[in-house]
Length: 449
Image 1 (tube, rainbow, N blue to C red):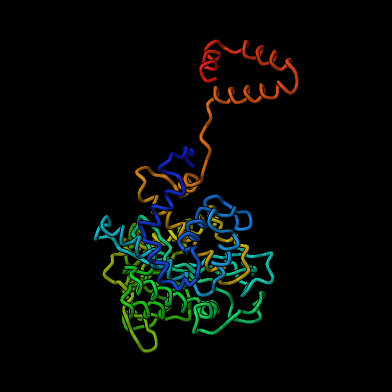
Image 2: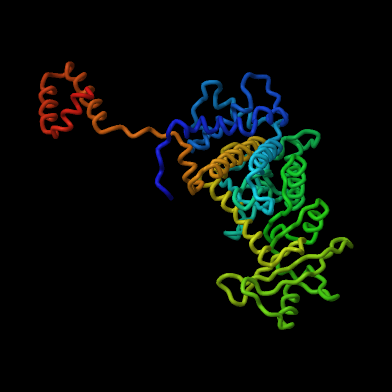
């Protein structure tokens, strides 16, 4: 990580947050997300303060009160089940994308990126909708949630666009308290019911909401967890091209030259045809996929797995006009969401919320994503290559370096004040100390005093 620079007045945290709020028109957007508190404290003030708390690396229990409201007021706003945090994040992302659009090359392929991350809550028991979730890295069940995230990317900038805090549908896996409400006539009930549905269904809901609120993209990138003929078909009906990694399942078949093959069988068929392997990939072919009687073309690319000669990965997309190299390059953009998860957890405490209310946790996730949007915008505006870590530390308030001479003046002045209450001996010690200093420092001390 690069050395941390001192913050000047222009890069002050509060001024940057204020300029970001004006850029996206946050006061106007908060009127559209069902914020109905009768108070002089606006949602804009709360979100701005929460962003500064994130940059200060403080929890809500250690944060200091704002001069306009207390920490308790901020917690009450987060726990307000009427606020549509998902819509707020979508609207902010749409505004930022509109600001970026004039500088984005028209040849760029704008894409949604979908993935989920484990949000462990090991010490919680009474937290609402807390469940046992499977950790794919440790291959064991942990207590917590799955943070489903929909992001947007133009190849340079990644912005979190929408989210859902996923729990478990099976009551046997439920550990925390039951949902406070399941009435889907209200926002609080809708997101609680959403948390207990299948993740692929919720993914479609998040994409639909983002598109409806003005977020533009042509592709959806996802890993093998979300990939299926059903997902490809639904996205195609929405006017989007899916691009993901395919599992080597023996239960799903594809039609190639009027014969049905699973992925392994298709690879063996292409290998047996003595098709020449390319430099960047092994084989590529257009097949037909089926879902509920609907048949549609799918371009499949076999890529050698790094570090293994005998193994391979399989990418597929409904945009059959893309060349194999373009498919590989576009799928590589999916890694940006993994970078987002790491940055948000490491610097913005994404998985360290101590809130027990489900509504409060959704609000906390939304503010964390908004804070990341601010960092992403600053990264886009920077002329030098700052990392997200650099930008995070630059957003923190830091004291300016004090000059050595000034420090000596402060020290000597303090000692002289004490001298009258103690004895004249301290004056002698101070004079002896000054006499031992170099003459250049002695002259500067006289001028500074």
